Image 1 (tube, one colour):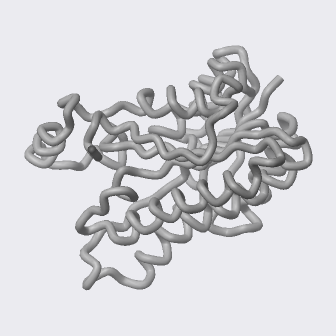
Image 2 (cartoon, one colour; image 1 turned 90 degrees about the horizontal axis):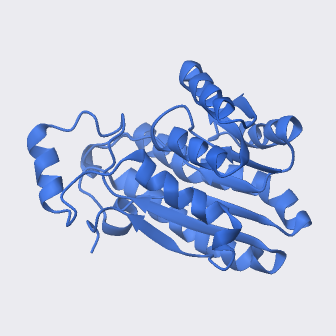
Amino acid sequence: MSTALVTGASRGIGAACALALATAGYDVGVGYVSDQAGATATAEAIEALGRRAHVVQGDISDSAAAEAMVTGTEEALGPLDALVLNAGITRDGLMMRMSDDDWDAVIGTNLSGSFFTARAALRGMMKRRSGSIVAISSVVGIMGNAGQVNYAAAKAGVIGLVKSLAKEAGSRGVRANAVAPGYIVTDMTAGLPDDVREQLMSHTPLQRLGTPEDVAALVAFLCTDAAAFITGTVIPVDGGLAM
């Protein structure tokens, strides 16, 4: 029996990853910070697939909360075989107008939160000499994007975190990879004006926006033994946008 924890799993990419892992045979910890109804719905969908689910609340920008999310999942479902670092926020704005609070909030959740949660899971994984950590980065972390210096910096930082972790933990059988989604149809992109949406699709070779399931399929693969010789990679799921 395998166990996974997905942070930010109440909706969007996180919920899709949780369901993909359940389909692949994992019991899943459903992490969330504020959307309890969404997290509960994700858990019910996991259970409908015949797997166990455990809903666990916490703000992973706080190291103690991130550790509690890991330990709570392991106490309910068993030792973690996989961790998906998906929780993220945006506070967009031009750099010259960006407040300290908007910078700190995005770095705190998207980068520090990934570090705190991975560190909490890593101890047990290294002792068991097995585990897969998959971080959700972004093509913005590769390409940059005007109006998102905080988000781009955090997502680029996640890539550095994963590559360094892969080198540190590989000898103990722990793999670490990053997935870099392009523009995916989620709540985060729902407010894009039609002209912006059309422009994005025109610059994407596959001529569409992605779906959460596009991302989740790769995440689930990277968590399984089918990807046993893959670590330290950053794989875009962007329809070719970042080429």
